Length: 119
Image 1 (cartoon, helix red, strand yellow):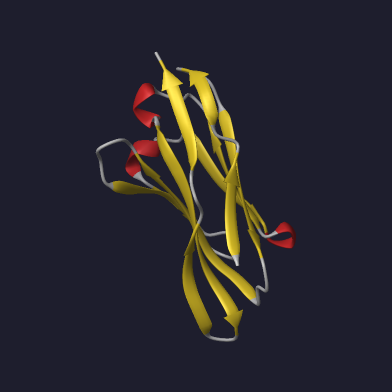
Image 2 (cartoon, one colour; image 1 turned 135 degrees about the vertical axis):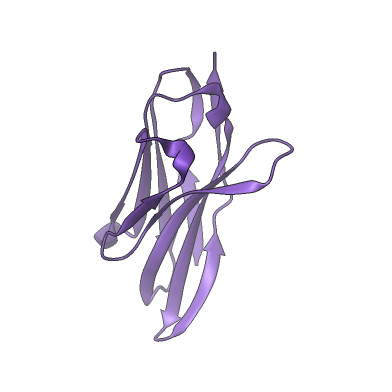
């Protein structure tokens, strides 16, 4: 099973990016999915979570600027990021709870995608 992120890049402050994360492999069930980010020299921070049923939570620093969504048919989670700030610069990671068989759940991470916001 693999998680592959895409959509990162370089934008100016105030700009927007949409990140995608596709899960592939022999997946029985794709459960809760999350986005994290890690800036250089800093710890990895949680950004947003979406449950299989669409229950959503955001970190306080999102401040209404980001939207997490998922397409269960495509095993994909998205992160729409608007009004980007230089402090949003980080590597963004996708994380998912994946069942390979019923009740056999494990934690999976993508390789990350770089987001750079210039002032």
